[in-house]
Length: 159
Image 1 (cartoon, one colour):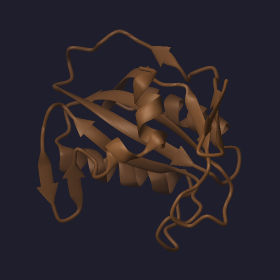
Image 2 (tube, rainbow, N blue to C red; image 1 turned 90 degrees about the vertical axis):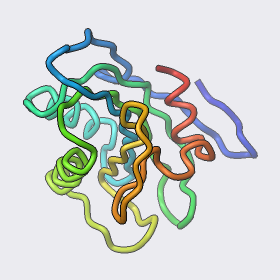
Image 3 (cartoon, one colour; image 1 turned 135 degrees about the vertical axis):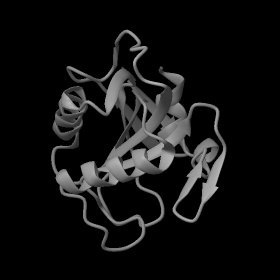
C-alpha cells in the first residue's frame, strides 16, 4: 500500500515477522514500545534477524510488531529512504537498563554514530515504557517529538 504525504511516497512492507502478534508473558513486569529504523543495507532482513534475536533473549518477550513503513529521510536528506516499525516488548528491565540493552543490540547489528541523522543500519528508540514519564540526561520517555513523526505514528496506528 502506498500513501502520498506532501509529495512524499510512503510504502508499507510485510515480512515473516512484521506484523505479528503473540500472547502476553506474565513473567515480565513492563511493556515497552520500541521504534525501529534503518536505511543501510537490507533493512527488512535485518528487522527479521532482530526479531529472532529478541526471541532468543531472556531479557525481553516480543508481544507485537507493526508492518514496516518505508519513508523519506528527515534532517539529513541526502540518504536513502528509511524503513521504520514498532515492536512491543515485555521486559523486567528498568528504562535505563533497557536503553543499555538496546544500545548493545544496535552495536551487534553494526550501528555506527558518525553524525546526527546519519544513515544507519539499525536505530532502536524507546517510544513508551508502560505509562511512565522519565527524563534524565540520556533518556526521555515518552520519546521526544514522537507525535510529530509519521515514521512512529503510522506504525503505531497499525498495532
